[in-house]
Amino acid sequence: MLKIQNVNTEICIKCKKCIDICLVKLFSLEKDEKGNKKIVFSDPYKFCFRCGHCLSICPTNAIEYTGAEKPLEFDGIKNPEKIIAFEDLFKVIRSRRTHRCFLDKEVEKEKIEKVLEAMRYAPTASNRQRQSFIVITNKEIIAEFSSRIMNFFFKLESLLKIRFLLYPFVPKGVRRRLMSKKTKFQLESYRKRTLEGEDLVFYHAPCVIVLHAPSYSQMSASDGGIALTHGMFAAQSLGLGTAWIGFAQEYLWRNKRYRKKLGIPDRNNCYGVLILGYPKYHFERAPSRRELKVKWIE
Image 1: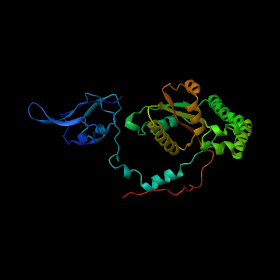
Image 2: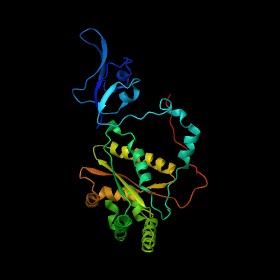
Image 3: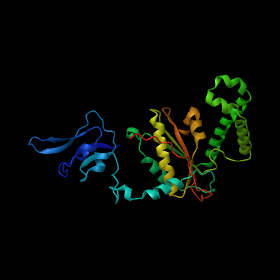
Image 4: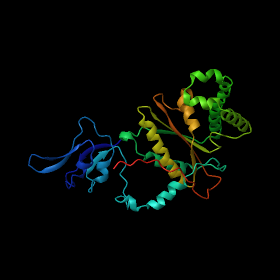
C-alpha cells in the first residue's frame, strides 16, 4: 500500500505543486531553524488516501514513498489529449458492442491479465481500491453457475400460476410485467432453449469475471461500473468480445450461499459480472442511440 514518507529537500525545487494538488493539504512550505524554506509532508491523522497526485506532479521526483510500484512515465503523459484524437477515441467508444456469440477458443491468460490490469487503474471513490476479482475459466464450473442462475429464474414460472393472488402484494412497477403474457412466453422460451443446450446466461463464453467489493456505500456500484467499462474497452483492444451479465449479478446479490462458494467474503457483494471470449462475428457498423435529454443551466 502506498505510503508517502517525506520530501527529499536536496532535489525539491519548492515549486509548491504538491501543496496545490493535495486535496487534504498534507504538504506545506515551512522554514527550518536556519530560516531556509522547505516543503514538508505531515499526516499525523492519516488523512492521505494514497491518490498519488503528489508523486505524479513533482517535476524532480522528490516525493519519497514506500509500498507501491514506480509511477509510470511515458511520452505524452503531460498531454494525454495528444495520445489519441477525440475522433479516434469516439470510434472506439461507438464500436464497442455486447457479444453473445463466441468461438470455441480459450482466452490466453496473458490477455485476461491485461484486462484485469486495465480495471485495476479505474478510478474509485476516495481512492478506496477495494475491488476484488474472481476469474472463472473452468467450463464445468461456468456451466454449473449458469444452470443455477437459470433455475433461479425458472422459479418465476410457478409464481406466474398464482400471479392473480400475488397482484395486491407486489409493487406497481412489477405488476404489469408479472401479469403480462410476454413474461410467461419468455420464461417458457428460455426453458425450452436451455433444455436444447443453449447457455442463456454466459453464452458458452470461455471466461467469466466476477467483481466484488465491500458494501460500504452506493459508490461501490459506481466503482464497479467504471472498472468493468475499463475492462470492456481493454478487451476490445485485444480482439476480445465482452458482455455484462445482469442475471448473474442479480443472482449473486441475492444468493449469499453461492457467493460464499465462490470465495466472496461476507462483507462483500457482487457489483458486476463480465464474460470474455473471442467473438464469433464482427459487426459491420455501429448502431444509433437515442438523443440525449440535456438541460443546460448557464
